[in-house]
Image (cartoon, one colour):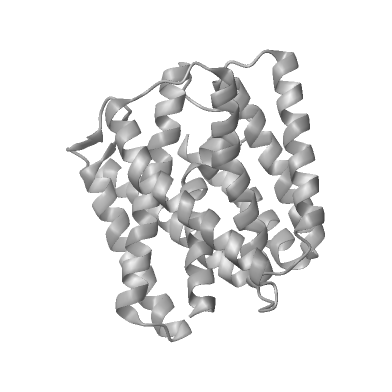
Length: 273
């Protein structure tokens, strides 16, 4: 399994970096929309949509994406685009509230949604803001987006190895038996080191950078656990099999759904100040 994970990563990482740094903004947005549609298809499978329902769901998602690209031609780094910045600010705030307040209760009670319309809306709530954040952060700077994604990947990798080596105390045994508190602590240590290095390199306030990194780590754990709960309720181990050793697209981006919209919020707050 580890060998497959590494081999897949060796293919995905260079491809991702090439597209991130070389593609024009429009083509990057289109590529990210295509990946989002794959993730939405996997979500539809978790929601037990029928084939026709999945097709309608994806068509509606595509329409939303195309309309958003047409209306969102503004760039968030341009100060005159205040309306877009305000919209993004409130969207980021709503995302943080959802993940920090509603999701912990959801995980504790393990609510199960059986209404397919609500599941469709939930899928949009999770994945469309992620798509928007991927596009907007890349417009700010490809390095900015990469920096936030590196934080999540470092946390995920550190949690995996720390949990495997030292894991004894289960984090959420009824949701994801493989995750441990030791893994979270390993992720916290690795992310803290990363935050210190970034703060020194970019000349950021050390305390603020550590606080923001800790918040994003907490959100990444929430995103990971939430998708694990949805898979468990659907009775599947992985959201798909597109990525050998990793499962589906959702399995790879689960932590990003909760962290990148919040990261965009942080950037907008900095710009407003």
